[in-house]
Image (cartoon, rainbow, N blue to C red; front, side):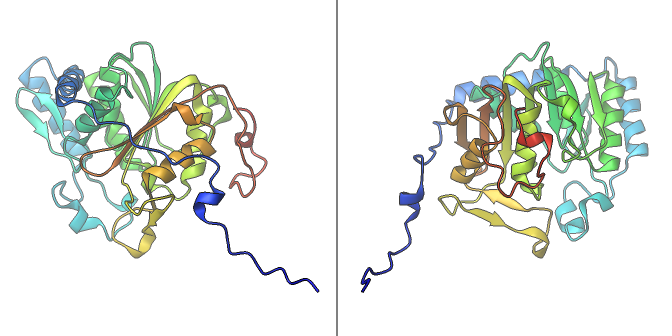
Length: 313
């Protein structure tokens, strides 16, 4: 008679194939302050040369793209509506000569960009680099990246926001091409095209983060880097917080530091090229550098079965 007793399930520690991820040390305050000056200087490139132009540019954009919910209170006024059903200006913009437009995200583009530079994630000089800005809203991040010298392609699925970003960049003369489409409308001709993909404040708004990150990996050149800033879960381990439509807002999966690290490995980034930082405001900032073009490490259950994204890209 077989008297072998059933074995208890293996613990997560026994199942794990690699040690957990650890956050990197925060940069010194002096480095952050220097980076803030660099970010502000990059944005200052797009200020008008005279007050008349500054006023005219701001007025043109205000007339063409009025706020459907106030930037200061849009969360309370519109968070129960679908995000594409109204428009609110994204980041604060300074047209020069004291002419400004307030945005829902205020100066977050400057804060995240400065932290990324201070950590060594975002180069201070992007001259000659091809950069993809995913989820550009009204153009704040795109202008920062262009101000650092990049040729920027920006994606935005919200049609009015995309039009606002396109108009803003054109009016201030920034080298930014805005495309009104979803990241999920992947383009195999973009494989290996970009030196940098910037995914700031976006990944937790996506219903399929692994597919999105795999597309970003595929779009990078070997040696290119992905920068991710996201809302975070603090449950520990490989957990994610899920909100979906049961909560106010447009949030899906908020990863822990560990789960974000695992996501990046599972879409192709070498583990030793992934750096994770917990921001002082308890959000995550990560940088991953692509090695060689690689096939998806595991295709079981992949949401684009048989697509080009499974292969070497």
